[in-house]
Amino acid sequence: MQHRILTIATYALLLVAAFNPLPAAAAPMPLALSISAPHGPFRSGGPMPVTLRLSNVSKKPLVVNARLAVNDVAEPAAFREVTFTVARAGQPPLPFRLDIKIGAATARDARRLPPGAAVTKTVDLAKYFELSGAGSYTVQAEYANAMPGVPSGPVRSNSLHLTVQ
Figure (tube, rainbow, N blue to C red):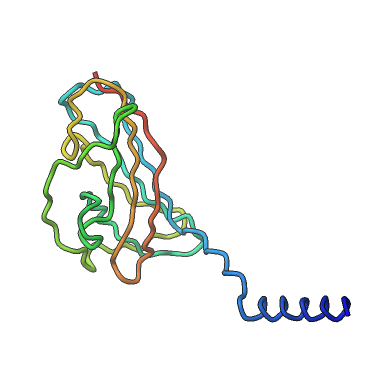
C-alpha cells in the first residue's frame, strides 16, 4: 500500500512538472549604461557635467534610442530615456526640478550600434537638480526605452559619489 501511494505521488509530481515548466532564464541585457564625471569637487551652484555611455555589450548589432533624453521618472516612458537618482548622503532623493515638454522619440533617434560600440551624451545635472548645498551626493542613472523594435531595458548605471563645496 505504501509503495502504491509513493508511486502515485511520484506520477503526480511528474505531471505537475510537465504542465508547469520552470520559467526560462531571462536573456542577458544586451546593453550597459555607465556614467562618469570629471574629478571634483564641484562648486556650489556651478555646473556638474555627467557623461552617459550606453554600450552594446552583445555579440550582434543593435538598434538603440540614441536620443538619451533626460526627464523626470514621473513622466510617461515615451518622453524619457534616462532618469537620474541624485541624493545627498543620508537624505532622500532630490526632486527633479524642471517640467520638460518633449515629444516621443522618432526614427531619427534610432542608431545602429555594432558590438562593443556606444553612444554618449554629457548632461549638466545642475540643470535638473538643486545641487547648491555643500556635501556628498550619490548619482545613478537608468536607461529605459519605449521606442518599438529597440531593447527596452531598464539598465542601471554605476553609482558616482560627487562632492559639492
